[in-house]
Image 1 (cartoon, rainbow, N blue to C red):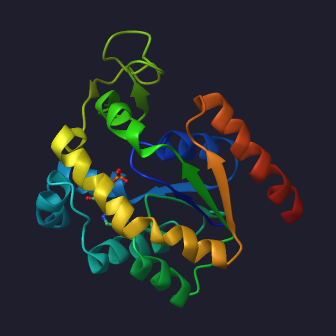
Image 2: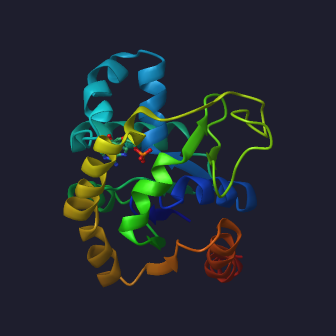
Length: 216
Ligand code: AMP
């Protein structure tokens, strides 16, 4: 089973993807994480996409698709993927479809956009294991130290206020169109991503459990 987590930046997709990965036999494929790793490791790809990312622009579709298809090929033994932050444009969604990569479910994270800036400004991410925290709602036990791996918590460059505005605008202009695209295919389920993490987790579990049972 392949599923897509759709929603604006800061709606909690990454956090919930990690939970789904641990509870169901699915592999998280976060394009943002793949791109950040490429930048960190200074690969040719990283060099090329750095400017897009630092300015809060979307990476061009062709590059994004190459990275996604390559990752799918590498991890093909996986039982299925949780696409986190992908697709973000209609072109990306259509490419999945044209390549026969079937999507069984799209979970649409609904959140009041006025709350996003606030959420992203408080986001911290573990430099090592990538676990996410919110310094107000989900703080680490020790200041700036990851509970899980003791790595250092950092602020993402693109979580700066002026860049956040650009990312939200791209969501509204481009990614939001995917809601209608997948609703028409009748595979989209809405969840209230404004709820506390545990409640969002439960909403997702209530959607996924019956589907997983059906598959058995
Ligand atoms: P994210 O971690 O999902 O917020 O992604 C961080 C950044 O990576 C985005 O602001 C974009 O610059 C880039 N990115 C991630 N996923 C995509 C995608 N599907 N298409 C284009 N750019 C992306």
